[in-house]
Image (cartoon, rainbow, N blue to C red; front, side, top):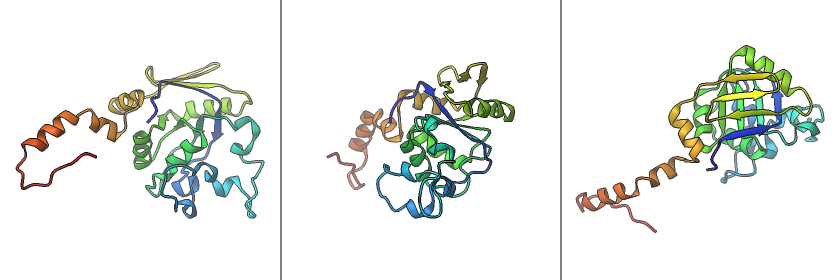
Length: 202
């Protein structure tokens, strides 16, 4: 997965609490077997009217937010079904980070495994950041190594699990972490009794 360091760009405001994964990516779009292509269905029920036409009033349909890389939203984001398609859809749309007061645990874990940064700030900090995001042409920066979110007149620090931080900065998913131990794995396979299953390569 791609390495994350400093994320900087437009932030889109979606200040709603308890946005669940079925709102992020509705169940009718979960039939794909690949990870790509979900972005066009992100927040489908809010982004489109009853006839499937885009709603120009929805924040992500507005021209000024088409290139947003950060989503600023409310508490308990990503609750509900544990579907991995939710972070896939957010990343496929173009988001690199989600900033909220809190996240559902499984959603947060799914994000960290595929390189989507989740940042938790206080209620007051989120309120200030929403006001910034609602300003056309806003720029927000997230410095992952320094664990800071900044914008014009705004600065906030955030906590993050240090193992998750290391993996995101170095672009390491679970497969890439395993590959760092190939020599140990191969040694183990060579030494284990031959009546046990053997891992083969190629």
